[in-house]
Amino acid sequence: MTAGHDAARAGSSDKTALILTGGGARAAYQVGVLQALQLIRRDAGEKRRGSPFRIICGTSAGALNGMALACRADHYDLALRAMIEVWRDFRTEQVYRSDSFGVIRSGAQWLSLFSLGWALARWRRARPRSLLDNDPLRELLPRLFDMDRLPELMASGHLDAVAVTGSSYTTGEHVTFYDSATPIEPWSRSQRISVRDRLGLDHLMASSAIPFVFPAMKIDVNGHPHYLGDGSMRQAAPISPAIHLGADRILVVGAGRLHEPQEQRPTSLEYPNLAQIAGHAMSSIFLDALAVDIERMQRVNSTLRLLSAEQRAQTELRPVDILVIAPSQRIDDIAARHLWALPPAVRAMLRAVGVHGRGKGARGTALASYLLFESSFTRELIHLGFTDALAKRDEVVRFFGWGPARADGQEGEAALTDGARQARVESFV
Image (cartoon, rainbow, N blue to C red; front, top):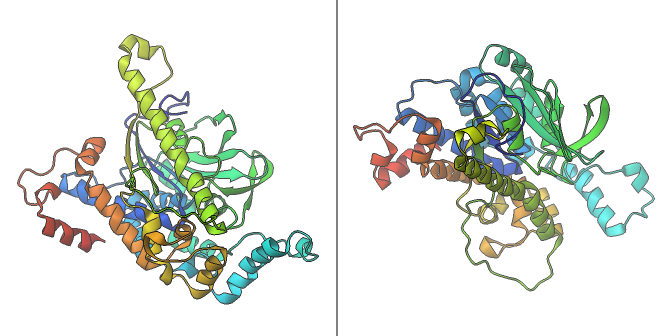
């Protein structure tokens, strides 16, 4: 699965892939990272202004961000600027129905189901599909980017491949939908398959359908109808699609606990409520597989370095450079400071399942963090992503091969005083 896939290599060498993981509203962090990369790129004196990524792979909310970049790969700066504007001013109502009627119409049916049981006579008629109605997101996405441009962009050489992942409720398989400039044979592994397809809105809606929260999508998979949900579910190898699509270098932008501080957390002897259990389950779905996959890939790379050139020639494994940028702070704690920003109807619904309190003592904030599509929260995550990426400036420059920072000391990030650096961060965020 990792650095040593037997997948066909696509086209020329030195292909950099971008992997954007899932996490609902947490994906605002990715925007800050990408914004900082552009600043680092400029300061390093990089002359090229196109997209630095030949391959883009996204899952869940990361699929939405990835597609926004892919669909304007010929105008990368403009694509990034548009993405920043959306996330800076996000409102919950742009993603799901957050008015009282909308929440009651969807969420109340679920809560009634939990409280009154499967014996409800209405159940067979009502058939609630999800906790929330994300029709507003479906209306928003076509206004943000045009997916019909993808074949043209790949044919004109701006992009090599794009992949979006989903999880099939029908068969239990993890499904990667991809399109590429040159033919790449579909791959299949245990409980994982790939399908070359013309990517569309349904693929994005399926990939970002957080389990229980948003409804599944019906999509044909190899000629058979499947109901698919969030691609983070059962995603045992998040890095795999980029490898199969021919990546030589991979930038992974996570939205979870890879780099969060391992501080002692306050403990509670109270029985966990529904929100805490749901948040714990979502963290497992969205965050854990990536850490395992990265470790596995690093072990493969380390093993390959121990082999001679002759030995490496006899194996199908190949080294792949990887850079990971992930939050340095606990996003759950950040979310706890912004619960007030949620619409009243959504706050009431979350309170009913156990989201309450403030600060580090708040309960259920992990669940809330995936649904907090409000600008006060997303702006803080953008700022965090921006500063976390700047802190890895030297690693970023080496990874992309952009050359040394400017020697005159006037514009390089390393030469800035703390005050000037903060002012610069604020001007970009």
